[in-house]
Length: 268
Image 1: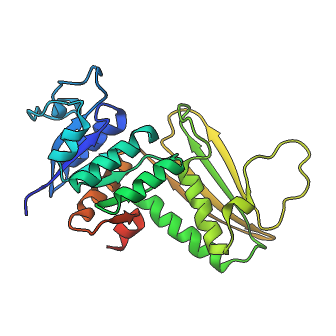
Image 2 (image 1 turned 90 degrees about the horizontal axis):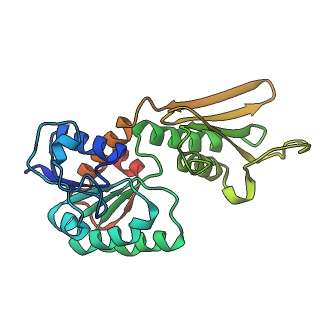
Image 3 (image 1 turned 30 degrees about the vertical axis):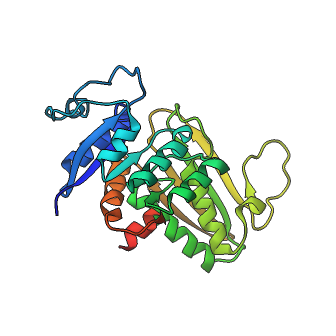
C-alpha cells in the first residue's frame, strides 16, 4: 500500500510546520500539500523548506477545496471558524479529517456530525498520546473513589494561550465527571476569590496558570483526609501533538464514516 497522502491546513504556523515535518518523517505517510490563508506570505513557498526539510517541490497553496480533493487525509489545528467549511470539504472528498482545534460552538459541532456521515473524523482536545491515556486513567480513578476525594484540575500554558481552562483540562473534568456519574456543568467550580466558604462536596475544581512558553502541563488531584493522589502530564514540546495527529491519520485509513477520538486510535 502506498503512503497515505496527508495535507496540512495552516501549514506555516508553528504547529503546521511541525505537522508537516512529522508527516514527512513518518513511515507510511507522504506529505502531499499544505495551505494558508489567501495573501499569506508563505503562499508559494516550498512546503519542505517551510517545515525545515529539503525542498519537496510542493508549493504552499491557498485553496482548501484543492487540498481536500488531492489528499487522503487532512490535519487541521487552526481555528473554529474554519471547521464547518473544512469538514464539508472532507465529507465531499471522503477525506480523513484529523481535527485538533478546540473551542467549537454548537453549529460547528453540528457541521462535524453531518460530515461524519460521509467520512472518518478523528478529533481530540489534545492529540498527545500520553494525555489521552491520562484521560482514561482519570475516568477510571474517579469511578473507584467516592466523593470523599475532592477533585482539582490544575493546568498551565504559555502566555499567548487565549482560552481558559484549556480544552484538555475540560476533557479531564469531563472524564472525572463520567467516572462519578455526574454532569460536569453541575459540579464544575471555575473560580474562587474572596470569602468562598467551605468547598462543596463533589465539586470538580479548575485552576488556570499562564506564563512563559509552557506547551502544556496538566495535573489532576484526588485529595481526601490523610491521602492525596496526583496524576500529571507535562508536554515537553508541540511535537507530541504532531505525533498523535499523524498516528490518527494513519489509523483512519479504511475506517467507516463516523466521529472517532484518540482513545479509539489507542485502542487499535
